[in-house]
Length: 386
Image (cartoon, rainbow, N blue to C red; front, side, top):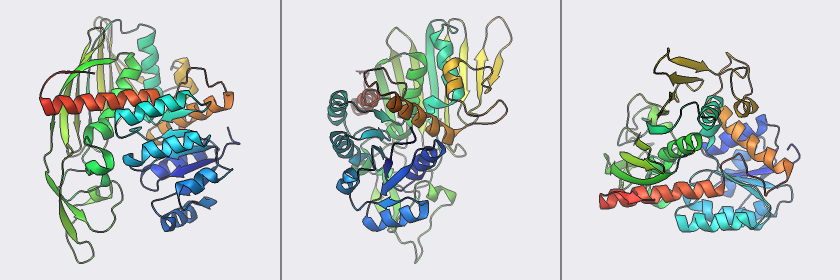
């Protein structure tokens, strides 16, 4: 694992997050590429990275690079993932995998034709407590699943003066709240339960149909610290917004289970709260992402319980991705580390015909199919089959 060189594209919020997780695993980050040569050089110097690439062709030509992490805006994912695979590089892509299902289907087909690892960073799967929840469902503790409900809510875009590139359909696609955070919830609950969404009905809403965009650059999430006011140093311009701020999705799963998802980036006080409740014939499970080391276990005929993260109490797969003993919290940065561990452990084994434990391009493609169905349902105001 430690002998593989990694290059990272993107210098925003996700780029440094990937780099920090890779370094904690002892995997060398040999180069970085930003949106301009100057940005690449400045970022590489700040992060202590050996190479700063002027463009993606230069990155792919570097023999020190065996794997590429893509953390750029969504519209670049398809062409860079495709080029990297064709150049013989392993690829770990931020979600969404591509801008539409035609692109993601092409990437799935390409990934299946090469002996390379191709993954999507659905990192929430790798909270130890959630890996344990998956084992509980798989061994039948909950019985048949009746319902899966929950939400993913944030507040970083609460004000009309909050701005980020993700607001623009040209950069991230027509869906925003659903595609940015809702897909994490959808991937997670399907991974835990083994259920597949069969049909859905969506109602989405854009509260701020226009926003104030600073003419200078804004880092992801920085605007939420305080409302940005127009000044001589930060002039603002009004831009129209087409992507949704919030919305709900009714879900029907294959096998008969029902579900509901609520997403919002305008819920004051909720910084990054992913939560779900899975109701089964024998037990229920509830998780609150703002308390990521706890799992509530609901019972009908005996006291309910809380499982607190402790490798001595977790199932086998959860223990494999737990770094610290009980009483030592693990959270968001650790989920990246463990997702990447699954990815690079797979590469180290070298059997690319084996089923991987990390989220694959095929699973990333399924999430895009879900997003397209959600958008179609909203636009046509009806139930849609996935």
